[in-house]
Image (tube, rainbow, N blue to C red; front, side, top):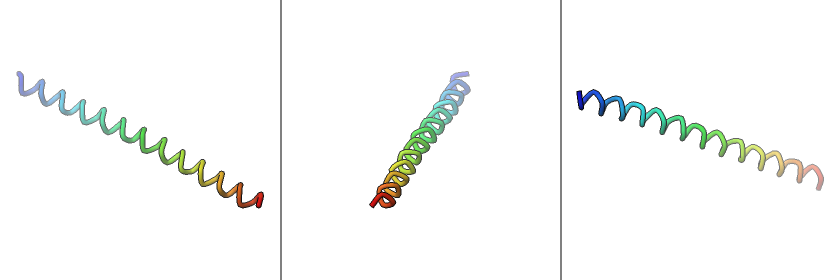
Length: 46
């Protein structure tokens, strides 16, 4: 019983971590894209 509970907890913990990291990665990528677009706009203005 305890082993099963441990398995569930580790599984859900892993799932949560994965989702969290994916969200972080996505936001970082979006930030990088925005910075890239801004730099392109800056070059166009120059």
